[in-house]
Image (cartoon, rainbow, N blue to C red; front, side, top):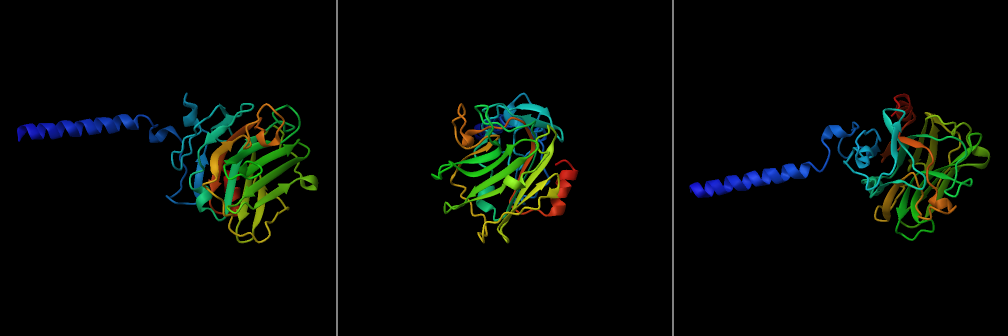
Length: 282
């Protein structure tokens, strides 16, 4: 009996030792910022980019599910609130998925702060779009992506463009371009950008610095956004879905600026909720 007890004690000690070693592979809870959000709540993905770790993957962690980036070549700079990510030309931050955002959202809100100085450029140096984020897709869609969010233009007239593909391969463009471009967005200052898709109206709203733009594009009665989570092979922050980074391919353009406080909600936030994000620099 004595030998049996000693064997059980040794086995238990080994298990505790093994678990302790495994936990050392992930940062302690205090090593990355966390947002107030109940389990299964509306905030599905949140990267504050506020880390100061020598490990760049920890500096880009999503604090909702401790979803670590698989690649982060960006550098840390001062942000709108704490630290932020400074882009590296022809590079991007890569995540496998935006958690369950695509699989559960009927409406959605994407919120971030960005800072960009002057004309947007493609990777060959000519005028072209610069991406806030995109989803690289394996569903064979013409663009190679199921979601695109980009800026294009100069500080006098900047376009904001959003493209979404649903499970049935139907796509829609929501754009503020042509006569609806927006001045003052590329002045090397931090700006708060929010897009809101509302399934009850099938419309996309744009908010800049807490103020709704008067142009409200519609997806003609589409209803629920109905995206395919299975089609998303990569979530990219700071680049389009293609890989021709040495060309002028607009689908491969990368960000030449800074980004902070990236949030993906599975609901359509209200004006007051968006104003609070702006006021609190969140």
